Image (cartoon, rainbow, N blue to C red; front, side, top):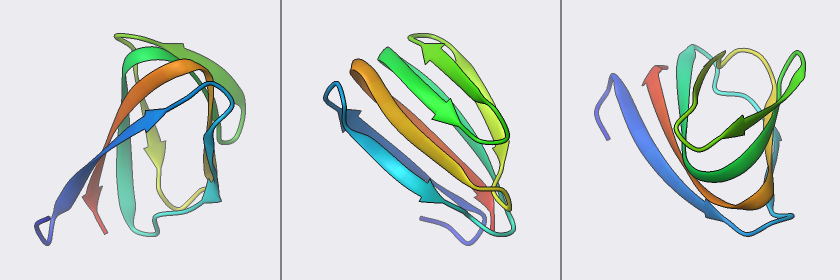
Length: 78
């Protein structure tokens, strides 16, 4: 971890998730490495392997694995 960001790798089984939360002052980049993950922020979208989404950490976000998968989350700032 550095003062300017950090990366987190999550391995999720189908049905597992990360409850709604925020990262105030940060910008998040979510890269789905495998599987299929439902990302709920202002809207809900399903993100598959090889896809990347960005998120304003001041807003609430949650994740739910639709299929077993891995997600790399990089937090910048905050």
